[in-house]
Length: 238
Ligand code: PEP
Image (cartoon, rainbow, N blue to C red):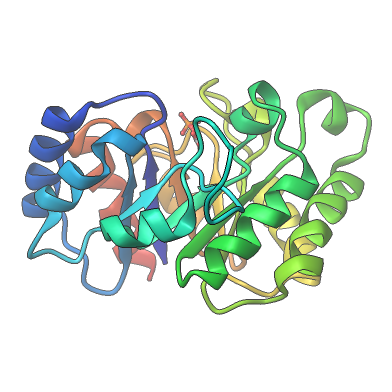
């Protein structure tokens, strides 16, 4: 069971260090894995904050090239040198606002895994796709792109994040999450996280689904109390 907090564009280095120190003191990681995913500039500070604890630090993206003319990007080797454990790849906000495609998600995943990083690769349908009964088609296409590139790699985790549930307060029902996770697992048998408005209150029922192996958390990961509450819910079902 992995609980990962995606901070998005929140928390500079000072706040990251303080938050991670407080989180490390507040969270019980026995039986589960806990990770935070700060912005690039806050990775080193977050690593200082979690030092001595089992809390891991992941980046929010990673480029496929080792070096080159790719302004604004960061390579897997650079992340490994800083000491992070892994990276999120293909978050829907990156697909939506920064032109991420199934192909670039596959290339980023491949490079990160080859460099020894762990990868949380994100998939999920939009509301229009769900309303158009295209959930299975979309999940199969997005997951197959990752599977074709890297297969069921030991360092790969997939996150099912229905786009309509991210930052909206709308959560997939436990049945919707389970159904989607089963489709993904049919193609790629790796741990599968659920993401989309997960909170301490709804975490127990979501995490209790047989094919839900953890959570990718946005808004509720920005406060120690709420994030630690989700981690406690994970421990209860782990
Ligand atoms: C996310 O950013 O991956 C996410 C699921 O956000 P939220 O929990 O705020 O919906």
